[in-house]
Image (tube, rainbow, N blue to C red; front, side, top):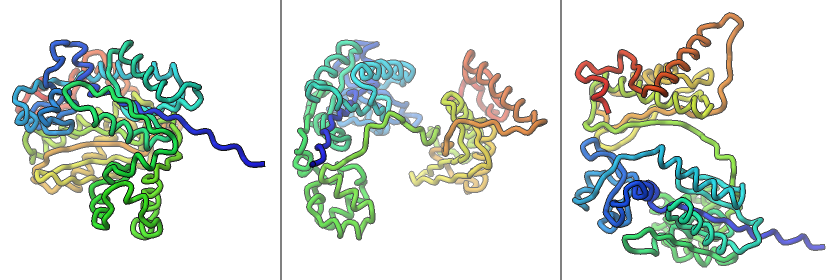
Length: 404
């Protein structure tokens, strides 16, 4: 007796259109139809986090330096971010997804995969109704890609959004019927495929592989010989094959924070003050997430935009500010060429898991340190981060409230 055929999956990729800007326009309707963006200030080397569709008509894009965006669009309105608001709206959207299914994989604050295979209605109908619900109930535009797997659903959404031109949110829905995955992917540039970055794309194009269809028809053995397992995976993706499930467990692999200086910094004291603030931010986020890690790393970007990262593995897990800062400072002392100007500095902690108490019978030092950390968190939760500062954090030339 033949085995039953596997059920064709129905996967939806949802992406909120210009999410940060859409939320800002809800709070200030005067922004509608105007070129504006959420991002950092140009004098502080800020970058664009999100831009409205009218701004995109001028060539403004996310991740673009704000100074460049203002050159392209001198009338661009640049707003600071309101991340608590964005998080609240994101939760409202996810709540509507849970009305359909619990098989939800949230990729970021404005993006998610949804497995609706168990629902009887066609996936295209489910997507259209979901889009209308989010607009009606949350007043946010979104675009959706629909396919039998995550890879194709994501690329379908990208293609659908790009096909909408003009100064309005795309509100696109792009459906790829089962069995048409390879045909849909074939004419697209090879760089559209997951796992093909600029370097790999250049190598493939040197072989004459310019489209995903070219890649799909290339001998698998040759690509495997050139790229190893990655070559094998690329061929499968190029043919529209992706068996990965929608994962409801989104594992946090690391927590980090970084800052770009308004001017390159070569002063050791200022670098260490910044490192201390970043370490406190990372520690606070770890404790809020109920996580600790045993690998501390720093990131340094130089004036020529080259970047260096260094890390150290600790003997035990930590979520404490002083542990993070002490090790980050050690990395800085070991790997920063003294006097070399720094454009960006960052701190991160990885290898995360829930913290474990590792105390001996008479070990009260760790207990006192944790109680002090909890007290500091409570004060800062109530009165703000600058309510309590370490003495070394206060610049001799600037009062605390002058610092960004």
